[in-house]
Amino acid sequence: MPPLPDALAARLPSPLEEAADARFARRGVRLLLKRDDLIHPELVGNKWRKLAPALREALASGARERGTALLTFGGAYSNHLRATAAAGRLLGLRTIGVVRGEELADRELNPSLARCAADGMRLHFVPRADYRRRTDPAWQEELRERFGPCLLVPEGGSDGAAVRHCAELGRELRGLTDVAAVACGTGGTFAGMAAGLAPGQRGLGIPVLKGGFLTGEVRRLQREAFGQVRGDWWLDDRFHGGGYARTSPELEEFAADFAGRHGLARLDRVYVAKLLYGLTVLVSEGAFDRGSTVTAVITG
Ligand SMILES: *Cc1c(COP(=O)(O)O)cnc(C)c1O
Image 1: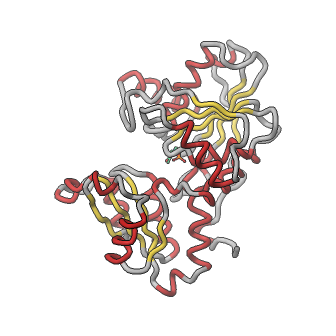
Image 2: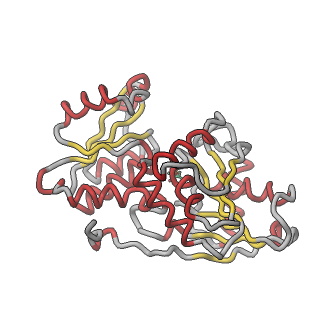
């Protein structure tokens, strides 16, 4: 595969920073922050890691010259749609975003979708019942007929190639931590990272969606990417805070305090705040051995 163009140049391996935090120090645990949020200014964090293979393939197949679009799926606040739209602008590729929720079409675009549109993404709003068919080949065919030649990228960008590419995140952490923790949406980033860790290291996933379905999904993604389930990992389902993008005054306060203590200019509330909150609860419960190192991946 050819290298990615300069517009997608990434800061890799992403920086690893010590976070002196009394809640961890008290338990003899070292906390590190893996700053994937600094990989690329516009394709933030794990979105760069997940989209890079699809973008490389699109460019190699002549998508730009032929006007082939990248078509993908997401909710109204999807970071994945934002990253895909930004990539389209940077690379001169057409992008189409299939957005869950037909009613959104009649409203003013929220800031996230407005950014997508400003980056040239064509937004196509569909009823939730249709959106549920996003992996159905018959419906995908209808979308192709409507929009012309396109390369389909799955929701969240999590396909086999993306998961394999996320294994690099795990490899970057070899020898540097005992536990590597990531917030999970589709679980693709976590599935890859956990597979890339060395024997003896463990992956911890914190789902931000309610439902407890993610263990099966991470296994499925690892089978798709590697032909088998890989790595030593577990999920803790207690920290979704009521569901996707749900927040609370308590989480808000925690996030503002954590960002202030550790000099983070912004702290993503949908994913990263829930991860960090979960880790502080787990460390207070004695979940990590004294003398061990825990790394939180700041995915965006
Ligand atoms: C998309 C996203 C995730 C979740 O990634 P998955 O691979 O879908 O689990 C985590 N953190 C941030 C900041 C994200 O934007």
